[in-house]
Image (tube, rainbow, N blue to C red):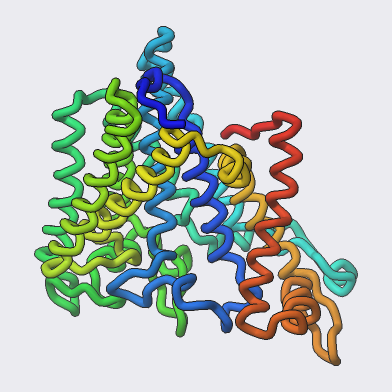
Length: 398
């Protein structure tokens, strides 16, 4: 039944929770194929310039963080929580999320997982040595930095200041990427090897603390400089959250967000003629383009849930969204664990992860579909775990 009464300003949006759940489930889907050699093209990242649906998943999550911040901060301020206290809560949460990212990068700390390893020499120094090559930045680290930076903007600036900061991040990043020369490459070089972001990461982080792409080239898709437009992604979510807290009718909000999303996609696509859409270096055009898609998808979720009253069909996404950071971390740690457990299969030693794929899913569906079925089954397993937590009202908040 259609609803026309505006939602209270601080009411929890089920449509946003469902959007979050869909995003985190998709994140796990694209991160957990049975074999990276067999993945459907839409579930891979674009090699460089351009985009695939997978390239929208991470900005969707940062966008959702921004929308949720608008509701959360306004609620806390409305009940008398001081800005100073909010600053401390934000800092604490950002440090925890960043620390979880470092923990995931370091795990399993060279800890023995097989009988052979347990019977050989193992020293605490092995764990310390692991940190000599640990990747410093990553998905959770970027979420933490964007959350902290966007929070400081929200809590200390008015609407005009937020707009100026967002535009400054997008335009400033564009200018430095095309105008600042990189030694040995020159200026305006947007290749993986010669872009300014990689140069800064090599100088600050060092190659031992960066992600390595095929062939061992050190390059980090969550690098330092490209975090600036990622902060803008979060702030664009804040603007959408501010609008959703207005007293417009549900139908008007859904229609407006749909229109804004289409405009954002068009602007990002048009401006990409001068600055290509590229997730790996998080170009300004990619930021606008992805935020446009996020706004459009949120408008559809808002229309289904808040306007049409659909609830049963979105329940799995609500369950996933209720413990999103927990399931992302837990899934990653379990994957890393079973990759370290070796088993014998057809006269070969395989990790438990690969064994499950080759012994169970390949016979069922072949290499390509078996790889996808593995990922889908992984999601369903975690959905079962999360449903138990949801049923028992256990929500692991960070």
